[in-house]
Image (cartoon, rainbow, N blue to C red; front, side):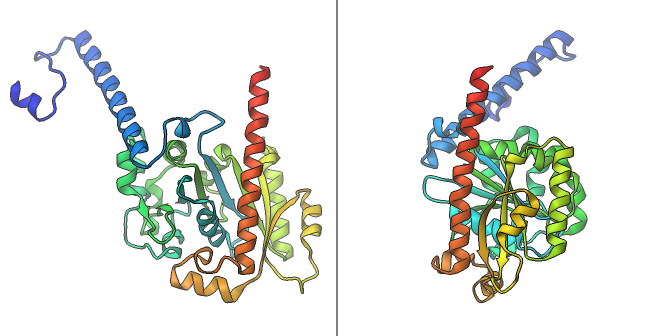
Length: 318
């Protein structure tokens, strides 16, 4: 028994165990595991320079899940997701970007971080997560300070992650990070649908072409069918070219949504940044695209604070 205790045993039973004693032992083990995870979480928060109060899961202070989405491919969602994460991050605001495009995700390559840990290292363990487990799996991008949870390295491995695991994982990450940015594919998978339900904000990306606007309209109609509040939507016009007649105002009017930010077409900045694996927000913050991202970041902060206050007032009236 002494040797068992030395290697970490916390309890013992006679063999064969009495059923009632076995149940009681399992409950004790569960309680101890919960207490150890809580202690580990406190130590992790302290090591990161935060406080338990700042990491609480209450509606006012829990981290915010922000989904970047477009029902049309090629609109620049990953570019926005990566650079928005950089814009929101600072020494006191921890940010993680999660790649929900499980087959062909590019978040890691946009940050020059290929060939490391992926979501497959966490998904099977969603019911036993603690801060240390998460921290060991996360990719820490040294240039930006942003943490990355990459998609699987092989597309055939996407099926190893289900929607329930993904949603549980995001709920846990919001306890550790101020912002959880989720980049998604255009196709509405079960994974994406699970994020729509729990996201605090949905950045809907539009471009100046009729297919993009049509698909955004269909997506907004779908949200109505799913009873997802329209207040979650943050409409963004990306790759804006003033030479094209379709203005942000016209797009907003057509979609019955205010355009929260306009990110100009800036190919000389964006494409080289993608090819180098360095977010353009780190290179030159005065470039037009970078200014557009900053406007989006500040508008999102304000929107989320307002929604949080409204939710708190509603809860207080109940």
